[in-house]
Image (cartoon, rainbow, N blue to C red; front, side, top):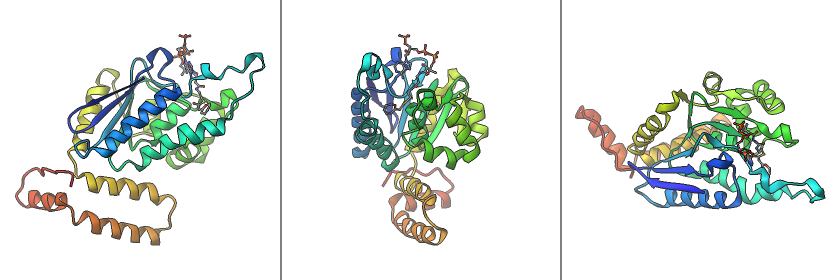
Length: 259
Ligand code: LHQ
């Protein structure tokens, strides 16, 4: 249900249930988390690119597992979040490497919010972000009610969440929800080039940057300045800092090793 392929310094992960628009079942959760663990534990994987097979990125939870017609008891969705979606979002946010998401088509429900949990989101012009939850009586999960107001403000967050209206890629860019919209035919190529560039970066510095930016929204400036001081102290001891300064002084491109 998930394809993983090592590329130019990064791991390309493709959600692969195209006939169900890559909706999540339990197996897909486990396989995706396994791939992310692999990306975390191998030093030669220095970034991740997440995308979807076929015409969609991900339609969220597979609702065909959730048929309650005929009086079946409603499952405990809190348990589903606790055991499947929340660990996934936490793993993406904690991964000490850049995670790029190439949203190749519709991203609905948890699929939209897992995209937003990634560090940098590129989307095909035809992609749509849909907070589909309200249409089935649920709340936006997988971090949706946390990411949306931070990225686009409460007014737009509430309207998207309460209406379930699709947001197109270009509006998503203009609102600051995602980084870039790209012509459909160019998305994967551009996302690969982009991720390869990040993979060639100063990985430790990028990991510290990711952590700092994530922590910023839950920390007062005074404490955050301390956190930047501590992170810079660590970054300043990396081989990549040494190489970056040497390359600057020698007027050449830096060759970062990730250490
Ligand atoms: C699907 C799905 C799908 C199964 C398309 N499941 N088959 C977390 C915790 C626990 C439980 C509950 O939820 C959550 C988080 C969530 O993610 S809740 C939100 C779940 N997702 C949705 O509500 C989105 C449902 N899908 C749609 O609204 C549409 O399919 C979208 C807008 C994504 C795409 O529309 P279309 O482009 O018109 O495609 P389609 O609807 O024709 O779908 C194509 C096929 O994919 C179709 O199957 P079929 O056999 O008729 O070809 C759909 O049934 C199937 N599919 N989403 N989530």
